[in-house]
Length: 575
Image (tube, rainbow, N blue to C red; front, top):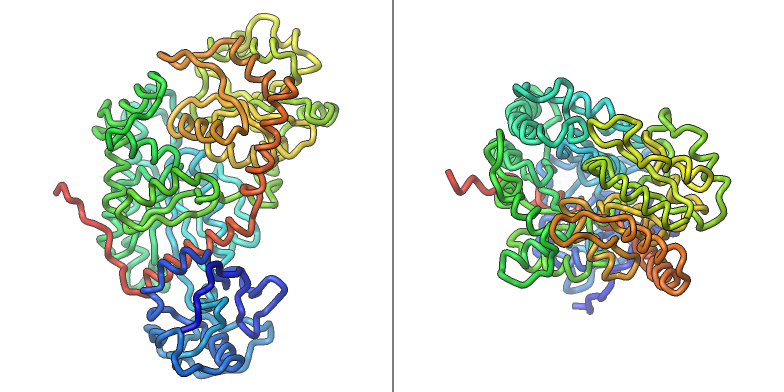
């Protein structure tokens, strides 16, 4: 047998599809070689696009000892051969059993994902826009490979989503399931942005009650009279402990998306008794993750553990290039397949996001008037607003630093407008500071030449967007995976964390000012941060790399279904 190449080149060598960069079908490309090599045991079950496989057989004769065994017969009888259609596309579902053929060594498994079959995926994110938006990006990537998606959430959340891109819209169905009523939960509250901290447990309880409407939706989709709507996969969030069980009832595999590798690796190290240097306030946060407290009767940690135990495979919005050591540690520890999704970069047409709600002209006009690399963009996410006293310290720290800033601020709950800022702050910073209290187009701002650094809470979406545009970071993590993310980025020397109180996590104005100056003003430290940020930008901005990870993920889903493993989710071990 010829030697196997150590790297699998990107182009797909379908004879009738060959282009400068490969097949014109967006998904007809092998995934990264390391993924394909791990899946070699599934090669006998590969479904080859009949026309393109015939083309391959025609351009390269079979050697005495073929590389590939017989391709498996598709469940449906192959249709008679027809001439190519007018637009040159292969007919969907056209599959036949092939004699062993010799494929170019650069293209061991020419699996035309668009032509071999169409599968339907149900995607169901957690009720937070920090989850809804990246899951929507994933929901748009799958249809670009020719498949269908049902994107599930609640009515108000669906209504508040940005429009699906025109290219993906015909293959994306938005499914609104009513959030069950829970006494005490504010009317109309359907996501974390809608509820104060004292109602969070009620939102969890309502979320758990969504399992029943979801089961009804899935049952209807799997009914015999539902037509061709039966889902092939469920993709759920880490908190959907009930989703794999509902999927198992209908013999549908379920993939669960994990948090960042940095956070999961930190949790693994702690569970194994390894010493992990965490500040006290973060240790207390981690303890609360496994504490049952309130109406839902289940801790966040238990939800995640059950979801991982019950699912078929796991996926992660990460990759070895982004988090090398944490990703390796997670892959080594997990007892189920873990598939990297890449970083799911914002759509190139990001301007369409909430296009009808663009920020007021005053904000962008102010930014346009600033010199290059002179503005700190400040945004700490929409999930956890700061207490008013910390808003004051952040404001005074920005004033002390003396740099220009653009601050996208979510107002603290229950605070009058007159009390949001320290007395005289807006007057003192007029001209070199601008505060926007509503939604702002973050990617547009980060792409602006005037922005020289990003003061961020280190949520994954914000980290990816900041480094995508080459902005060094001033880091102020608040909760969840943000602490591990910040330590990972600090290890990469792309920025600096704001100094915190070890016990309660609070910060003060002088710590804010010192971090801002180190990243923005002091030439020696800024040079280091900018240099390392540009190195990270090369990884983050490599769209082909991250699209190949999506290809590899979809190949994993197709291989699994083709292999007949449609009901392998683990039942509840506690029952």
